[in-house]
Length: 455
Image (cartoon, rainbow, N blue to C red; front, top):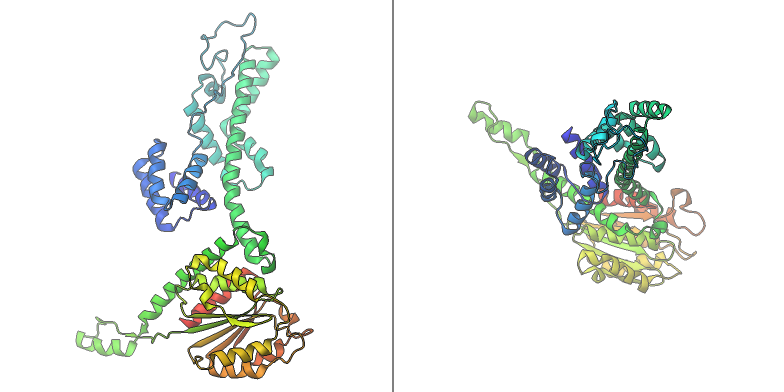
């Protein structure tokens, strides 16, 4: 049960924006085994060391911990009837203002707890009831009342209500403080359900928001505030995946022939394994982005992606064009965190109308003919709408013959390729791959394919 609690806490922590790996979760399990759950101060300090890495993470951790483990914290206000006046001519069995004043003799289990006024016992009972009611499964706001009733039922509210009804029918004066205590307890349960909803909704909301940003059209991403942070996270995942692939590829495949031959001297035992080494290449990537108004959003995120993964894809040269063509590689010479500012500068200087793909291709050939080779990958991002100007596909043919491959990303759907002034059919024969690129998910898949291909 303790491990389940910690698992739920880690889930809530991730929902609050604190990255927690599997190894860190195992460290946290060992921390809880050593410290236990009784001393919350020590537990908070220990888990903070295991799970929070940065100052920002520690702030989020502290808030999430306080919200999640609020059960065992004694309430600052009493949950017993605060101002229950002793009835005139009462039974006289009051103990003189104790927590259970006026409630002696109640028989239900929950009623006895309320009469004793033991906060720790009530909190432990509420936590146990919350687990039994599956409170961690709450997802939408309309479930609050349902889960509050479930928690109260698990605590034994049904027996308490029957006793209360009987006392009220008989006009027993103990019914008044007992009813007040039940109301206070129900309010405490509602507060806990609300805290749990906020924890779970935060985790679920983060997941749904990221999924929405991945699937929405790139033109509409400006409506989301934390898109750049999402791109950085996606890029980090790609870097980690590519690094594992590269490590495996660097080791090479098992050379069975050499391994078997060397095993002869050891009576057939493969004491030493031989590997086929893979010769590493140094890929060179050229990116040409149409930054006209209809394609600017896709160009922005492609450039952000490529410069976010420059740790594993360092040799990238970038070009932009709309009304004019030019190289913008130097704009991205600063730290990767300044890539967004560089993209803004590119869009401000090169955006416009009247795109001429034929002129762009001829200019690129003139500028880069001497450096294109079989290690070069040329990526063109654009809708191929050429304003009825000559498409200049002969230049793309020469580029594809000189380079290793030409890849084309088009922010329009395939059903629109060739419609109106789109020259996409004229360019397709010279592209190794032409892919639609309308959202972050498609862009991530393309960059993943690129990293696989150029490793």
